[in-house]
Image (cartoon, rainbow, N blue to C red):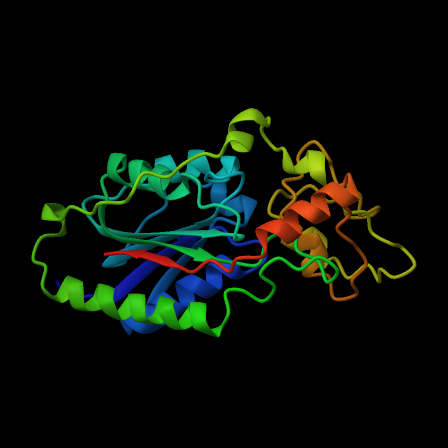
Length: 271
């Protein structure tokens, strides 16, 4: 099967998932790529979008060991029509959870043929300068693996006539005890809503524009705490560093993050 084009579908508030997918496409030598950016609320509201690429790449970050909840309705609306799909989960070095398994189930139920999958590591959304958690990832090594993965996909598809006959085994993920006990959106328990310091902020509007939940009030720059998913896009992409990530309780969360950061995990490839 010859691949001339691709459709990449991703959610990437801080850009980590997007970087991984871009490197995979580079390895596949595909220049014709249609992007469906689920980070934008307007895109997620448009269900069952047209998918025209010869191959599809779906990438999501792992939130609380799973696919981000706000993506489910959009993802299940996709119509695969037998197209080959590559599944990508990006997590912050804690645990992969069951995000890849969830993606696999959704893709199959939507009529895609899953031909490859992988989990990559990105800088954790809670990472700060004082408490860095895999800062700068995906790094050069990660992206080189992603590019090599893309080349492997290309070679695999050259030998395939009908992707619907392919069977890919993705190991069953695990939910740690904490993920089973904590309520949904537990990130709000461990971090405060990031408030803009008006002595630093220049009202450029970047945070309002980039917020994946569209919940930052334009004039006051206040965030609706009940809807905030703690992606901290507004913190990490603010050109003036007018917002900060504040843990609660600070000592316990800092210690937990430092512990999880001791071992640098590596990407896992399934092809």
